[in-house]
Amino acid sequence: RPRVLSGIQPTAGSFHLGNYLGAVRQWVALQETHDAFYMVVDLHAITVPQDPKELRASTRLAAAQLLAAGLDPERCTLFVQSHVPEHAQLGWVMNCLTGFGEASRMTQFKDKAAKQGTANTTVGLFTYPVLQIADILLYQADAVPVGEDQRQHIELTRDLAERFNARYGRTFTVPAPYILKETARIYDLQDPTVKMSKSASSPKGLVNLLDEPKSSAKKIKSAVTDTDTEIRYDPEAKPGVSNLLTIYSTLTGDAVAGLEQKYAGKGYGALKTDLADVVTEWVTPFRARTQEYLDDPETLDSLLAKGAEKARAVAAETLAEAYDKVGFLPAK
Ligand code: AQP
Image 1 (cartoon, rainbow, N blue to C red):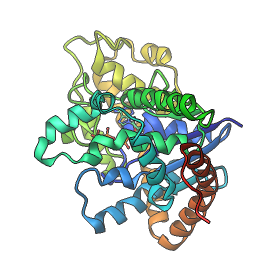
Image 2: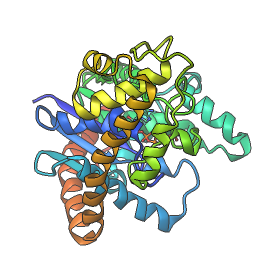
Image 3: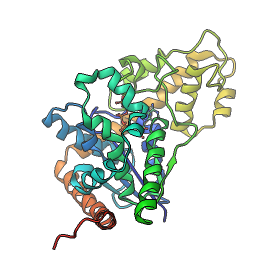
Image 4: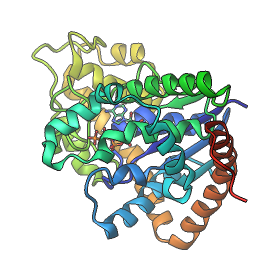
C-alpha cells in the first residue's frame, strides 16, 4: 500500500470547515486505500506562545475531533507528534541542509511574521517548514493530503528529499502533495477571496465545527455573496456563491451541477437556508462524538500511546538510516 502522512495543529480548539473539507475529510478516505499516518502536531503549535494547560487539553481535543470525523485507529496510525522524538531529531538534520534563503521564501512564514512583528516571531516559526520536512520524510510518505496553503511546504520537502538522496545516497521517498482541486481552499464566508482561517478570519467568516450549530447556521445565512441572484459555480466571478456550493457539495455528495439546477431561479436565500441545515446535520453528531471521546480521556490517551508506538517503529528505522548516512557515530 502506498503511504500517506499528514498533521493538524491542536492550537485553536475547534477545527473549522476549511480544515475538515481541505484536509481531514481526505484523511478519512485515504485510510481505506493507504498505509496512513496522521498526527496532532504539538511541536508546531509552540512556534507561537501556548498556555501549557490549554495545549494539553487542545491536543486531546484535536485527537477527539479526528476520531469523531471518522479516523479509525484500526485502519490508520493516529498519534501526537511530541510522542515520537525522531521528529525533532531528523528536524535538526534537515535544518542543516536547508538554505536560509530558501526557508526565507516560505510565504506562510512571511505572512505570519509580518502579522506578529519581528519582536514576537520565533526562530521556531521560521524553521517550522523544516520540521514539517522531517515529519513527512520519517515515514517515507508517498503522498501528503493537505490544503492548498501547504503546497509550498511540500515542494520544499521534495527538494530536501532529493538533496539528501543526492548527497548521501537514496534514503527518502520523494513525496507528492495530495490536494483535491474542489476543496483545496475553503474561503472565508465574509471575504470569499481569502482562505477560511483560524487566525485571520473574522468570527463571522469562520465556521468552527464545535460551535453551537445555531451560530454556524446564522453565519452561513449571512455569508457574503454578490448583488446578482444567479446560482452558478464560477470561483472567479462569483467567489461567495461558489464557496457555498463547494461546501454544500462536499458535505452531501451532491454534484455542483445538480445543485445549480436545483436552485436555478430560487435565489441565494434558499441555498443558504438549505446549506445551514446541511451543516447543522453534519456538525450535530460530530459534536456529540467528539464529546464522547473527551469524556473518556484514559481510552483516548491509550489509543494515542498505541499510535505513537506504531509510528515510532517506522520513524526510528528511518532516523537510524539517515544518521548513519550523515556519518554520526553509532551509540554502542
Ligand atoms: N481554508 C482552508 N481550506 C482548505 N484547507 C485548509 N486547511 C486549513 N485551512 C484551510 C488545511 O487544514 C490542515 C490543517 O491545517 P493547520 O494545522 O495549519 O490548521 P490551522 O492552524 O487550524 O489552519 P489555519 O486556520 O489555516 O491556521 P492559521 O490561521 O494559523 O494559518 C492543513 O492541511 C491545511 O492545508
